[in-house]
Length: 394
Ligand code: ADP
Ligand code: MG
Image (cartoon, rainbow, N blue to C red; front, side, top):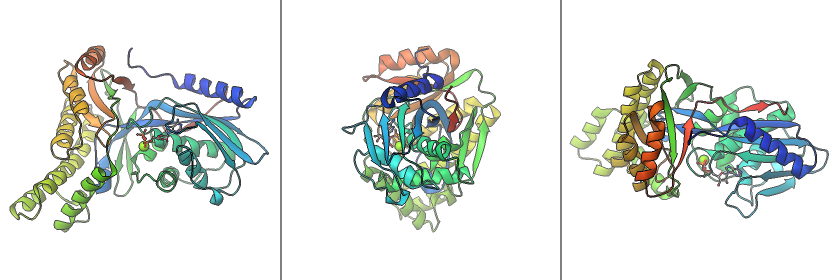
């Protein structure tokens, strides 16, 4: 099928081969961590709401081996934006590790710095099928793969998987300088095969949602391949509107607000039209995400699809984070018989869409989206995959 994803075993084989070629010996340890797609629940994380991601068969694999020398050397096979795809640094005390160039290496260094113990020097290669910068979380896949690699290398693990996810998030904040939420690291760490993950961003509790009834349906990801344009100022403007609305309502966050509060904001005439619309998106999206989790568990895919459509329309009209490319892919998908819902996924302004459709409509949907879209999209079938793990090297 046009949208199938390379088998994880073939990505592993590629990493083991690359390691052998570059370091003239066999790797001793191999791990992978998945990228993710968020099925619904956009811009809800910083409002203490819910998100519903699932882990993807698109993965980042790290293969490597420790040695008695002093330098840790890491090579990425991917076309990262930085000038070089390899770097080395003095191994030693993790507290001495500093961020620097190349930028992509900061995701790796941050995880070593935040690991639970010092690790010996090592050589490693990274091979990934998660497209970088497309909103499928190649950054968290890289962090969680690194952390999992360190666990395998040292034989030590934190007590709870939450600690691992939080350490990876801290690596992204402190070393890569990206103030990301916690969803990506949670799903890459705790994803369960066959399940989506309902994460409560208020108290970080999770619920695995088994997709037992999905047989005839599938989620299809479409990468717009349009450059990601969510500037930090646009992101801050959205976030500040949410905080302002919550403050006007005397609530800790918009998680505690409901549609009556929106009516109150309008009737008291205290908030700008823009703030009202931003808050309305968040309040309705938090509810939709909870409803979608129930629908998924029950196998009510008609309802799930409707909620996806409502989510996209709200992101487009109230939150204003869509783009002409994403709108065009979503409209094209919705025209196809057998499509139940389609929406942008991720923060918006570029990246991917996710579509729920009947399996037998996939080829038609791909053809139609390709014909209607002005750019060159890429497609992936999203099969719910397990979280990060060590894999045998044989
Ligand atoms: P996303 O997480 O949506 O893919 P981000 O901008 O958060 O996008 O993260 C992308 C960045 O993560 C890349 O620019 C690069 O620095 C780093 N990265 C991701 N995957 C790899 C990889 N396989 N090798 C090297 N760096 C990577
Ligand atoms: Mg990211």
